[in-house]
Length: 417
Image (cartoon, rainbow, N blue to C red):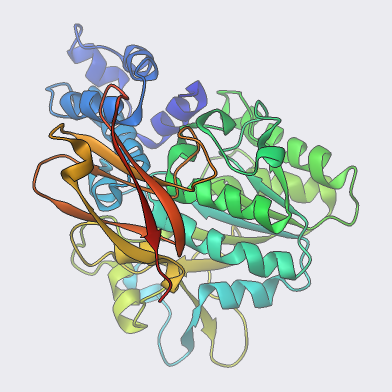
């Protein structure tokens, strides 16, 4: 687990120094990070962080809750991850300032972005790292932007260390940060390679936020535009990295703002970290108001009825705001079907061989066990069923425990509709 992730999470959290001082014997952030980093797999991390979250120290609970939410996402426990995140980090506008249905209409987000991107050379879409729903849109955009002539795909989660990624054609844990262990992000990288994108790592190892933004912009300029003046770039980044003005990072100039300065190219920047389900709703929640008013059932962009202008909740920072539908159910969310691209396949604890907790994951038959799986779910109790969502084809199902030991394996075929 890279140190930069801990730093980024701490920037989102409440200050921990005063709380840590009130509990002199509690492990601080560094000790917590070092312990988690030494654990061998996501399930072991989940068990440890679950214990810390139940502890007494508020500083530990705050940081551990953020780390636990990301780990739950990596284990395929997507709704748990959204509910577990310890605070609402959205910055929503006042309800009275929201778009009205008489002036705005709902449009499929992918359709709207493709239309806006036709004459653009840089498109940036962001994510909330613990909420994999913010990766669905990027996966849908990849083939459509490739068809428009986009040549390069850059993802914040990728690392420079895996120089065999393009030849291999699929990511492994060493291909990037811990976020890349989440199956949908693995599918994004796999699909970008399959489509023929030049896949570009660009993140910085710096723990200094200002240095990191500058490094990211410089890496994208050097690795994409400096040697390929006709390149067209699609970037998948986290949170405020895609902003074209200061604000969400204080006075620090975000990566998108600095890349515009380096290239002279105006990027098309899309935010989907604000209008998303966070596991609960409160009275007059602006997000739920938009979901109800515009009947949001898929990733959605609002456009003016008298033209094509998209709505942005912060137009100086990003060009359009995406509204994601709420999950609306317990268990694994149905958005994992990706609009019908993937089919439900039921699994239970049989492969776990009476060992719990247990992870069951689906691998493509030509890929090894250390490849990021096509999908994954985790059983925490016995006599349960869960749904994997898989494209039609053949898969190898594999189960393993918190020590990483294999428990069972089975070959399956997912039929087309």
